[in-house]
Length: 222
Image (cartoon, rainbow, N blue to C red):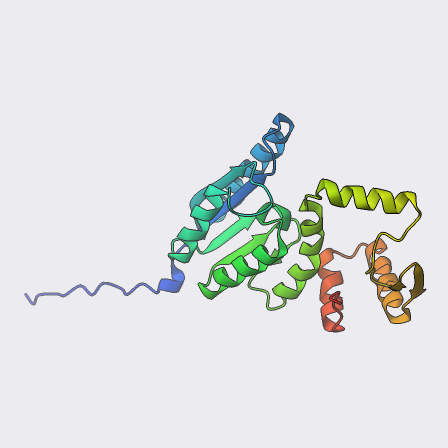
């Protein structure tokens, strides 16, 4: 009887399960945040484990993290693992849960993309594999960045004094040209604002609105 050699199949690396984790964060240790925190963790775990093409790596989680990544030990551990090739996809609730600083957000996403790691933001329905992601983040994360800024007592005092005197509190506002205390409407920008409002009241999502702006080559930098 002839010997039969069994040839083992060569597995295509692309057919392996994606290694997926979640990231949950709340910005304080206030007990009222515990419900949100625990809900984030359980929802992320359930979402990942329910996908047969995913290998669940875990949910990384931080509390009282502040406005940058310095105090976020689990966040940094997760990024390190991703850059070492141990994580393929990161799920997080929203941009504000992932990073509250625009520069950090863009920088981290670029670094992860260079290592073929995707980040999926559930609330905004965004995936960093989308070629327009940096434009989308630049628009959406502005709000997160502004929301997270800690205004010093000197700045608060200055703003309060200016308000008491009836002075102008901003020098830049999309849709207007501001020169000292004089405001004038910028017609093109005003049309963009009206278009965004119309799309919003018609039920369009953030992503649909931003994709429209991207296609029209409209940005919000001065």
